[in-house]
Image 1 (cartoon, rainbow, N blue to C red):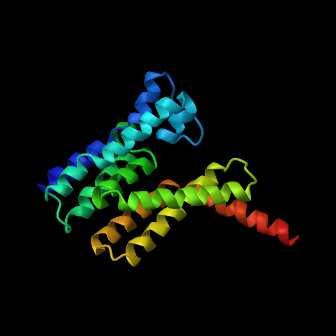
Image 2 (image 1 turned 45 degrees about the vertical axis):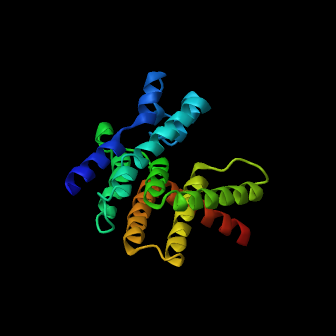
Image 3 (image 1 turned 120 degrees about the horizontal axis):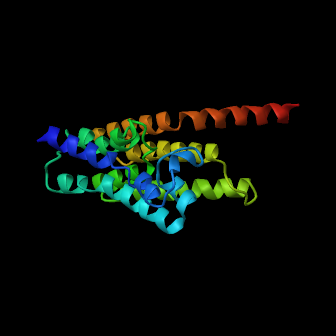
Length: 208
């Protein structure tokens, strides 16, 4: 049963709704912005309404059918890691795009909504909102770069780990968080590297 659940979850995660929606509107979202085949590039390519549909579908594929398996006891605590990380892996390494998938942010929200009844996903959303408000303030209302966005997404999810630990969540969910964070860092590695380089360059300029 576990093998079936994991394969089904991976398959659901690998469904690249945002990429396909872009194709319907004759847009290749992998040729836009940072080339990520996810919902946020869909917003840039096609517009807000279609982009939000992409966000919703990417969220729902992480949420369903995982919430069904969790709530009905098909994924006990010892199995939840494999079942819950599968849709994130599916999106990040989709066979429909030759294993070059997206960053799985919306899918991550869906997974944590299913496994913690929205508790952790809502906390993550609040953390991200605070981080983006701080960034806006520091940039005097200017737009953040994609490198800064990647840093805040990863930093916010790192804070989620502290939240899980301090609130006594199970070791299984902590392990799930660690695997999810690892995938997130890997999928954002170029942006994080560029952010670090730009940060060190600014420090050198300040010291001059």
